Amino acid sequence: MESIEPSQWIVDLTDRAAYLRGRYLTSFAQCEFLLADLSVKIDNRFRYSLEKRVSAAKTMAESNGALNQYAEDLVPLLDHLTTWSERRHWLAHGFLTFISDKKGNHLFEFRRYVQEDGGKLVLMTWQATIDDLQDAADAINRYCAAFVKLHELIYRDKSLNSGDGRSQRIAIELINLPFLRAGGSADEYRTGIERAIAKGWLWRHESGVYVRFTATGAELFA
Image (tube, rainbow, N blue to C red; front, side):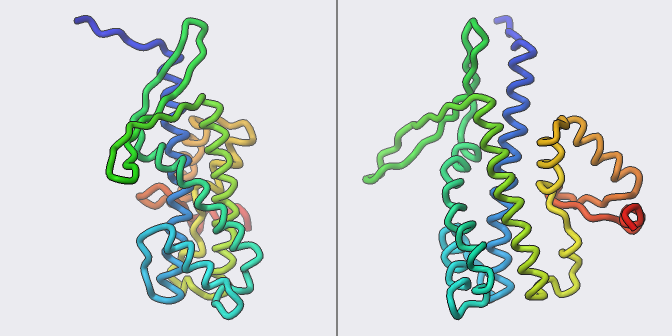
């Protein structure tokens, strides 16, 4: 049977959806890790589930807790974190299909199984346009930026970095979100980052989730 190649606009939309999916999941993962890192560094305990990490951080923000001075900013962020979880499940575990009509209207459909009370498995679907995915990625990126900024303050105040160089890390969301919101494209962003690395201005961790200025790069702002 002869295969049918999809139209270029479908390929482009699907590539964009995959990119936005990654942006969303990366932002969520950044916040998950920071909660775990705080827990380990402050009370030397690792909580596996997100719910336990949030609960531990709220306890630290109580009147006699180690993070009480940050409670006004920290607690609202913690309360809001779980609201991103449901969409995160769809983006992390959902099977993605593309639906369009003759007029060019489109939908991305995500499919995943959910186990109901009693053990019954139900196939669920969630549909979104590319604009929906863009809005979701932008929203959680803004949230992540605020989350990272607060944690940087906590790390400095509490001397949690202990000279390990983490205070020099720049989360990648703090670079790509302002760039994209200013009108830059994903390709332009990647080209700019690669050029800065090639010039020796930036060093990028192998995970791709943060960068650091090199001594040469720092001199550009001296």
